[in-house]
Image (tube, rainbow, N blue to C red; front, side, top):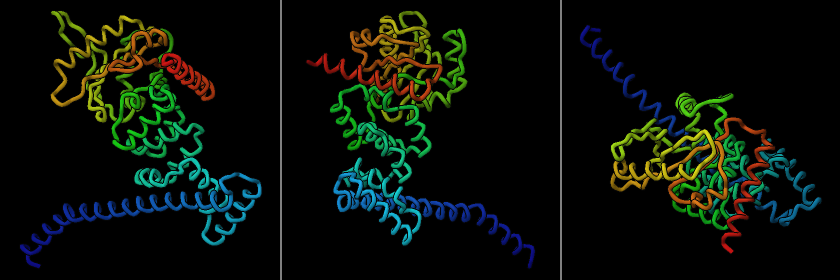
Length: 354
């Protein structure tokens, strides 16, 4: 081959490697993802339909002992014909799935984002509102199975402001999320925030808390939740000729709002609200572009008194108060403490509305 032709051939080969091969890889990987997604969706629909038919035809929507024996026999027969995916244990998962998610349309919508493995993590949650919360948040924020499992283990639902509302309001909020895919502050903010990853021991100052958060920003963002982006630390505000500094400033993509965070070593005090109101007023004037929602404030403190929070009307609105824990309680103690808090908040709300 002549040198000129050899050179042209080399150029063509390099061009192919640089453009064609990456494009082909992308096509192949994208097609595989679509096939996997289609398989997941089909599997979810199949498992729901099997669970529904067994409940309807065999169990008659009751868990009678004779029905359980029939389920075991059906599982053995299907396993012989189709393999391990239809054992009696898996059939019971399918029955539970159809039992706690009886609406075919909702299942169809969820299955576009959630795989069967997601549903296995959700269906055994005892609280129906918690099941719906995890399913919808998983769909909207596209959590992996591992992330979903971590959220459930940390009792995310019980730590959201939403969980402290009466059941009808919770249902209404989740239905709105299903229709619009838009998050509300009650779905975004939580209480308490678990900051055990900061590894703060003994006595520490406010600057130590802030420095630890900056050092562990990735973990802090995970605890804040999906959608938060870090904007600034010690945000300077000149008000009345004096310098004021906001500890941390974030932006939430879903809410389309700035979120100002003020850190407090001690318990919440009423003066903290006035300080946050000043920060938010400055941000609205100087940092809020046209078309963006007003900024929100989160006061993170070591503790708070529920009566003070209610009297200052801080359970709703643009300023929220939450506790932070630097030590994670054992699972049983955490569950007990959070369930008590949720029950107390709902009872208090019910009394105030009488």
